[in-house]
Image 1 (spheres, helix red, strand yellow):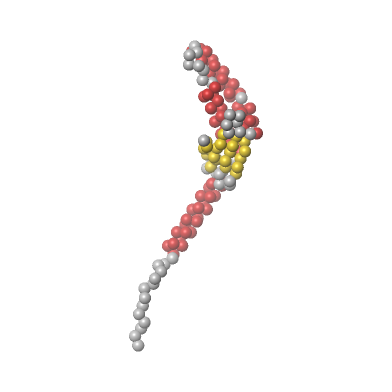
Image 2 (image 1 turned 60 degrees about the horizontal axis):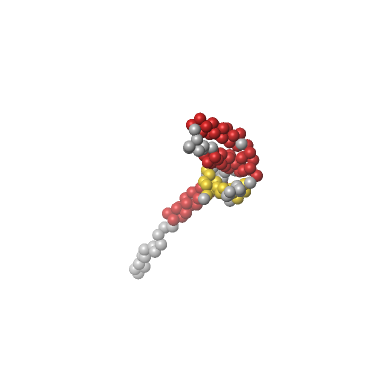
Length: 132
């Protein structure tokens, strides 16, 4: 009697595919954990927004008229910047009371209602990005 003919295996080994899925899943889990851990808290956002709004106000409000005399321009800039530094407590309080945080666990969206228009910010990896 002759032995039956041997047929090549139709399916390749599944070990490489299985290993790739395991490594990919582990990488996703690590990335997710990193996002959760670095999702910025409300206090960190308040610090960021206070600094950002103060910079915008100093830039937009404290720049004297270019046609003003040099001494007057310096006086206005210095006085305005000193006023803004003293007013940062009020700005901070306004931001704390007028901000809504949407916590999505991996990141947060912050909306601060200002009289002119709302400030929208994405907080992710302990960083903040203004949303137009």
